[in-house]
Image (tube, rainbow, N blue to C red):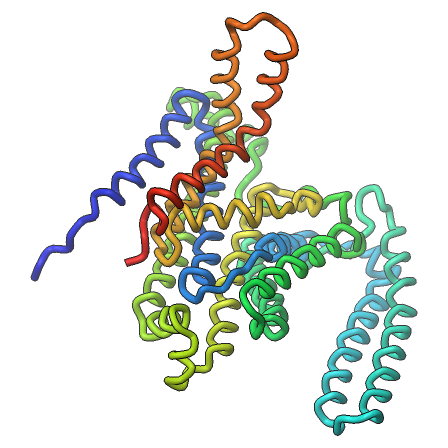
Amino acid sequence: MTAMKVNWKNVALFALVAVLIVATGFVQSWNTALLILNMGLISAIMSLGVNLQWGYAGLFNVGIMGLVAVGGLATVLTAMPPVKEAWAAGGMRMMLALATGAATIGGGILLYKRMRPGRRRTLALMLWLVGGFFLYRALFDPAAEAIEAVNPASTGYLGGAALPVLLAWPLGGLMAAGVAWLIGKTALGLRSDYLAIATLGIAEIIVAVMKNEDWLDRGVKNVVGIPRPLPYEVDLQRDPGFVETASSLGLDPVTASTLFVKLGYGLMFTAVLVIVLVLAELALRSPWGRMMRAIRDNEVAAEAMGKDVVARHLQVFILGSAIVGMAGAMMTTLDGQLTPGTYQPLRYTFLIWVMVIVGGSGNNWGAILGGFLIWFLWVQVEPLGKMLMDLLTAPLPDGALKAHLLESVAHMRLFTMGLILLLVLRFSPRGLIPEK
């Protein structure tokens, strides 16, 4: 048997990222290093999901923000306790209203398919949809007002199912997959630029709904105190056994408790990343993966060979979206709160795309490398930029020029991301670890 050839360049790139994270622990703090590691793991999982869509199938999805938000919502619906007063005030009416809305849409689709084209079908469809809409609003508006009136300072929403928060991770994937199915049935037959516009628009709609429908997730009031899969630091600090162990390691209980929790999250996120990576690699090397790349490279030729291009695109779009949604649920679990106002395309769409492009689209290991490297730079560039600017402006007298240069540090993140993207596209257009 011939020995497998080791690509030392790839090993060196991953080693460089590891050194950067470890150096952060020595220079700044291990809490900061572990936080970067955990968010790097989540970013790597998101990058794998986007790489499945773009690298395997060439689907340009810029609605990543909406999928991440759906995953975050799944955490609230799963782990938060139900608000009994809100359910008593309008919970069942809200369920009836949502069922009415779904029945209106489903009935409209059925009418459209069953009736012959013509004025009669158009009239019947309009009457059905308008009547269903008014019935839906007649049920929905009073129910929403009643729910949001229940102690709006701390609740004002229905709550969740009070289940273990880890169940929210697969549920977030399923919910994102459902959203992707709806998007795919609507937009996957469109050209790539129209698909990008459609996914971006739907993502904005999802975030707008989450910001404004307080009965669902408290909107911009945020949901805090989401249950955690690991103990709270305060509880660990009160545990005599933990305090004794921390003292034996030369750590104070406060530092030891925060490191223990972050390490616990890191192990769980690593397990998920490994599972997703193994499945993605198996898919890439399977006949299904070869078929997807053939469709990506030449849709016309693949369709001529009998492949259902739209169906395969829908399939890979759903799979990639499910991975992104699961990562969104993991991120909300790490944060311990849902904040719909923070879901911005700059961070949750542009940044993930930079990770995939810089790492190497079509290569799962490249997507992981891009996730860690770009997230590290996103976090560290601003403080490093401030240190550099303080050093450069130290000889300058106080004045408008010095103040302007110091204020420009806030833009270092965007400048650095753009510069890195340009350099990679110029000198390594296929990414740091290109597709084989």
